[in-house]
Image 1 (cartoon, one colour):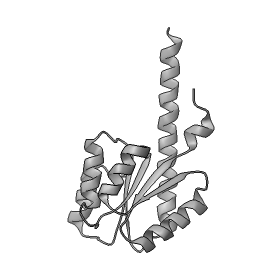
Image 2: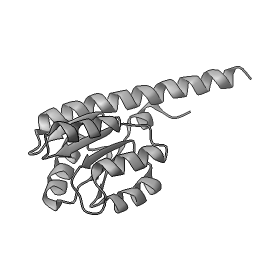
Image 3: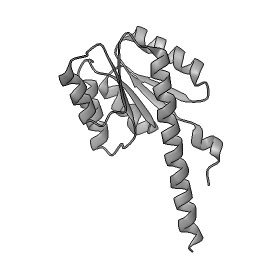
Image 4: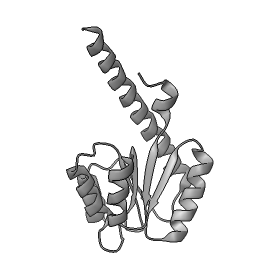
Amino acid sequence: MAKVKDLCLMTVLHVDDDIEVSNMFGHMFRINYPKHKILHAENGFDALVKTRQFNPDLFILDICMPYVSGIQLAEEIVREGYLGPIVFLSAYDDQQTIRMCKNTGCAGYFRKPIDFAALFYELDNTMVQIFLKRLEQGRAQRRALDRF
């Protein structure tokens, strides 16, 4: 059975082709969540490789990227079985783009330039939900084992 401490640790994949945004986000993330693992990918192809390798708990995706958009990437990772939260960061604010993001089941949508206070508030809530889901899964496993 996993320890509660281990259930709290998250792996987050941030995908953005803008190196300045990636560096700033990574810096702010490490300040706010020093024990969590942050991974970066510059495009959708790199993100898919890292997804298969590290199985992230949470995705934070830019929308406009070369080769594969953040929306296309979200659709692909969901098609591959990912059921967790996806947060989008984008300079776009048109209703069609927002609707397309919501159709992927996104947990949040934040406009660039990023309001880090609002983003990290949302990430706090999202990570709590991940933790609670893990805790419940652990309880269900324990109940199943107790029946035997």
